[in-house]
Length: 57
Image (cartoon, rainbow, N blue to C red; front, side, top):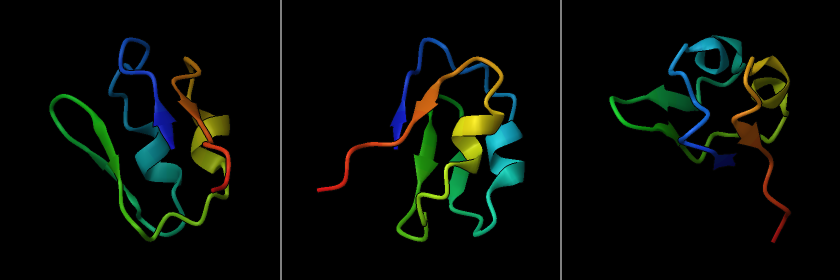
């Protein structure tokens, strides 16, 4: 997951929408753990467009 820190408002909308609880809201940035299944819900819910899916490796 790619997070644009300058856009992120730390609103927590992405955290609440994650079906596998893979997103953690810290003081400075969002963290995604290995449970992330790339469903894209967080990308769609972000009100400022701060999230995007990385290309698969």
